[in-house]
Length: 132
Image (cartoon, rainbow, N blue to C red; front, side, top):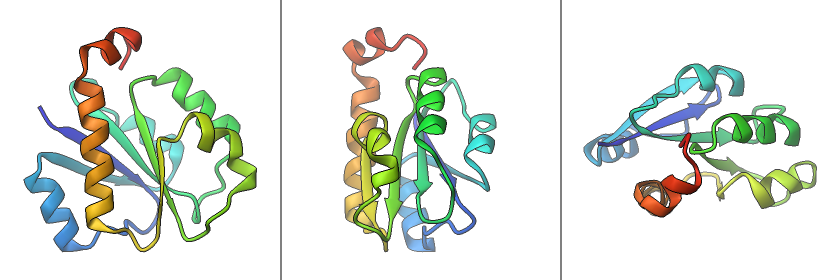
C-alpha cells in the first residue's frame, strides 16, 4: 500500500526528478487547483497527504480546520516562500504537520512524507482516528 499526494496549487513545484523519486517510493501524485477540489481526489484505500501551497491560495484557518474535522486521517504539508503566516497561526499549530520552504528540498520533503506515512501505519494512530 502506498500513499497518495494531492498537490494544491497551479504550480506543482515538483520537478521531474522529484516526481520520479516519489513515484519510485510508491507515492501516487495528483494535482488540483483548489483546496476544495482536493477532497474529491482523496482515496480511502491509501494514506492521503495534501501538499498545500500557502503562497498561491487564499486559505483560511476555518477552511483547514473544517477539512481536518471531516478528514481526520489526512495529513497536510504546507510550503511557502514566507517564513511567517500570522493569519494561519492556529492551523500551523494544530492542523498542518509541517511547513516547508520554497524551493522544495527533495530530501526534506521525503523525510516528512516518510514520517507521515509511518504515523499513518501505526495501529495506535489508526485507532485514535477511525476515519483515517
